[in-house]
Image (tube, rainbow, N blue to C red):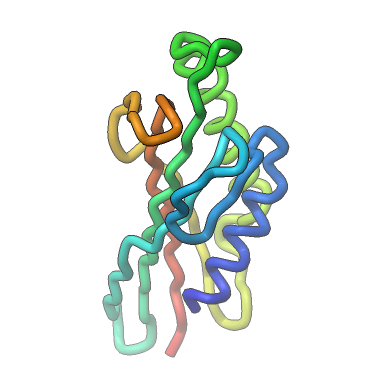
Length: 142
C-alpha cells in the first residue's frame, strides 16, 4: 500500500503549479522553490471489528521557500507559503475523493499544519520551512 500511496501523493503534488520541486525522499540540493519533500512518518493498524481493518498512514510534507532579494521573508511568510499550502490542500481535496471505494478500500485524507512555520538556514542560505502532516485512512473489509 505504501507504494500505491506514494505514487498517488507524487501525482497529486505534480498538479500543484506553484510547487516547482517535489522530492519523495530527503534531498540535499533543491532545484527550485517552492519545494515539497515527502517522508513516510508511520502507519497505525487497528481492527475496529472482526470484519474491518483500519490503517492510518502518515506522511510529513515539508514545504520550503527560499529567501532571496526577490523573495523576502515577509513575502514568503505572508503570501507565498500560504498560497502554496492552500494549493496543496485543494489538490488533495480534488484528487482524493473522500470516502471513495477503491478495490474494497474506503479512503479518507486530511492535512494538518504539523508545527509552526520557521526560518531555517542551510548551506544555500535561508528558507521558510512549513511542515504539514498528511494522514490517509484506509478501511479494508476483511
